[in-house]
Image (cartoon, rainbow, N blue to C red):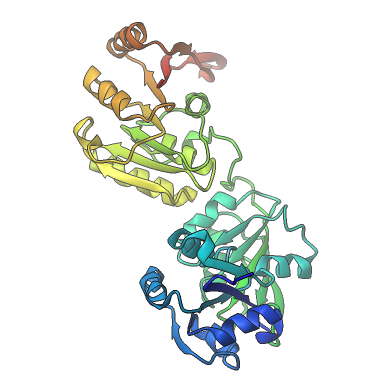
Length: 403
């Protein structure tokens, strides 16, 4: 069988010893080789052609590779190139029949093998090119997580971050240069982190321990209201949980949160799955900045802010799979524009607390169908020296699936 021209080769820290005979041959016969400086050094004995290190940004490598094809090209990456590596980028850029991949063992497999952890049961968070706060969505008390470090400074930053968020008692295992001759494994805690001379190639294994009152992640929507900074413009916890259920997040889907306020709906949407995307539209610049900070605090990295008033601010935005209108439901023009923009099969959810908006939703229900439900919540409150349940404002919720 003829081998595709583009070879994506996974290389371990033990260099060419980690490669299969086929992988060695792909590198040896390539007319062009590209990879990280460390990869090119490890595979130097096999490289006989022109070699380059990754450009910045790394996407600029695509035209370089394309210029050499159909001559044989070898891309050298770490471990399994499709595990937080360059594999997906290359697969998206070139037809499937033009490339093949020969992976080595991933760093996550090596780490779990060293620690005796179950690989399928252990989530992995990468901080390579990602902000530190993206770790927050994985902070479940009494759980385990692997963290891929950006460089030798990452472990200390993670330790300080965990301590600041109430996870200072977390045991941290630092794994350096796994699979190579310089492999090292050291253990400390977040609050007592004192490891120096950390190798640039490293990862962390966290066994999360939370102090009482620490804000951990949640598997379901409906986080406490005080998890979000807000000025009162927030969909309250119980209503938020019902609203997210109505929005029905699906992997890869895009939400428009019109009148995002604190960003709570968009953020809870994003935290449901790592592939979800959300655009928060808000006319108040202070609230929009607060929503962005809430997204950072909770690790919702896919939040895109848009400053402006609907419906004008909706123009030019990518087609949504779901739309929520809370503070933006001030007239038919907003709802009509949202309904028109929604993709077929998408869902529109509108929450109303005023009689005027309720009347608008009932008219909408009469014209295009959908579902209406009234949601009431009562919370325990003090009444003098006693206690009683005090009702919150009733919410009328409209849910419509676009034909």
